[in-house]
Image 1 (cartoon, rainbow, N blue to C red):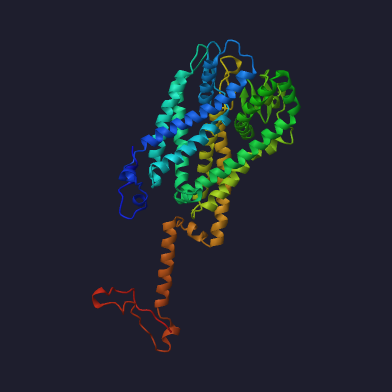
Image 2 (image 1 turned 90 degrees about the vertical axis):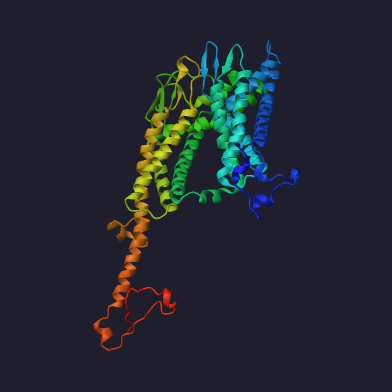
Length: 478
């Protein structure tokens, strides 16, 4: 796994001109393993240092009888793994899998910068070889995550080494690969490298998901604002102190992405659960007693309507609006589509969006032990299937309508009626029309021959005799 995969260097190429003078080695012969391992170590050390400072502040401010510095270091390692979305298990209490997605921002940002640095240090010049740099970063990073999972084990808590390796590898590949690609070219240029159909699909899906994310953030923010007084009372009852208040606020900020995803699941229709036999959906909610966490004040327990009756249709219309916008953006960004193909691409946009929303629903929830709170969060398959149908149908309708309008304005609707809707069919139709026009012009009419003057043109009259080709026939000019 070396940067020699970038390809052979030719004289005058940018890669050969950019070779360092140290040792006289070519940039293409420089190994990516060393920069990748260094970057993985720096990311892990920097992340652990930041987490340790926060844990140490809480340890100093809170009573810590019987807990030494070793326990602080183990807790820091466990929290760093939580940032990779690695759950942990408590002996006798079960598994904790409801993790704050906001903590992923810290390792993700560090891995983004690390991937960019590995690409530059390894003298990678081709976009298709950024994957080598991402793998060189991700493999040692995943190994370090496994070591941390083993080192942070105690008699009460443990993390899965296999899960640590899997999530560490995926996060490093995604964040490091995107950072490395961005180091080579800006985003608009990278997007233009995609084929036309794929680029239009990315634009449509991004538009639909951005609409749902904005609506989910608004819905979650309004709900929290309405129940702000109840949240303040819960925080007062906890009496966390000055340092504890800061840590509690940071923890709630970490759970904000989870709240936004749950709000999206709420607007889609299936909603989410917070415990066994519970549900929070637009049609109503049924909740048992909730933990004393300030953010959960937005979910009052009991049987009640989730939203006022006049807001319910608006909330349920959000995924259809998102799908409609995605269909319009898809057609605007796509090459010319056949009349019957645009709705199919709209359905595909809904399927991709539903799959992504199902994955987000899966990572936003998780168990809180083995008891009543073993099922917390939205159902991944329900959110994925329902959102795919809602977004797909809306995107199909709007994509078909927008494509019809575009074809009608371009005057090409007749081609689709005759089955010539593809790009090749359009070119063939253009060529056929040109040939028909040329043939019609080459046939003398009564008006042309009435004067008795017919001029025959040879379009290859200037070519050498050996290269002359037979022409399509005489052209009659008045």
